[in-house]
Length: 421
Image (cartoon, rainbow, N blue to C red; front, top):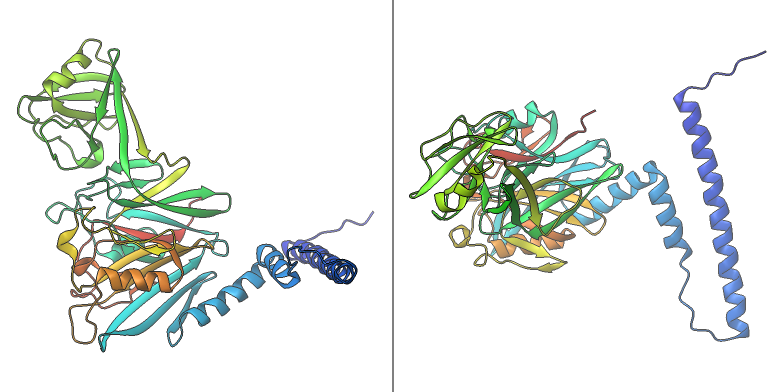
């Protein structure tokens, strides 16, 4: 008996042939329906919706055939970014360099756009400068190379003295830092073979249960705003928690049990955390010395895998929306280097770096940036940390011209990298 061997290419050819036959059948059916509809119109005047064979065909081809989707992506990019220098980064990912003029003066802009259905082997994720601590800063090239990223952009605001991110940061469903002033955040969700996105102003919905009590947690690994706040410090904060606030205390929690209480700094266990807040609120937890931490967000983003915050909004539900005052970001107005991320109605991800503070590129105002993000198709977009932090990396090199060569050391970045196995 003969044994037949097929390699992967043989299977692909068989599948592609079957799909092409199916598509041809659909086209013939559509044409037949169109002709039948035309004949019926002659007999009776009916206000039926148009049946656009071309659009239906294109949608079928676009969803089924990666080659056709890539071709359409190539065409769309050329039409969208007229007069831009366009470079292929990888399948489904393009890098554009362009110059626009505002008040007659130039602004250099770098854009990366990714069709996440074509680039399904890539994952968009925030990345810390190092994996084991928040108190660290590295160049974007180092962050990108350590994570095998093909593209990267500086991320959320951070405390310059320490590198601790200031705002919501979740990586692989782990909340590293909580929100500041309920600022807008970019949510990244698992959706089968590719990712989907959402944007909203995010609040922390976290609490500790113990000794029959439920205690609200006001933030995680963030500076204390009020002495009445209850804060949680995880191992990523460092080896020790800060001093407790006046009339306060800290509780060391190891494997769900309170193992130590003090107003002085406490060591943060690898398998636990430290709670810090007013003694009057935390004292009841010592009754049974049990503690269980639950962390959610409001809005409740189910299945969210990563979150990175920024602010303010730039585009919201397809309209220009810059809520700088509401998000307490009055200090970042004016014309500056800018960084932004957003997504299109087709779920393409877009990252943008704008150079500024020099004669050859004067930077953008937030309103100009918002208009630009909308002009390239973003239905939702947010501003990220800018100024001296603005830096973009593509395929092994920094592609914009930050004020400091290579960009200042960063706390975190948003990266496109190969999915982990």
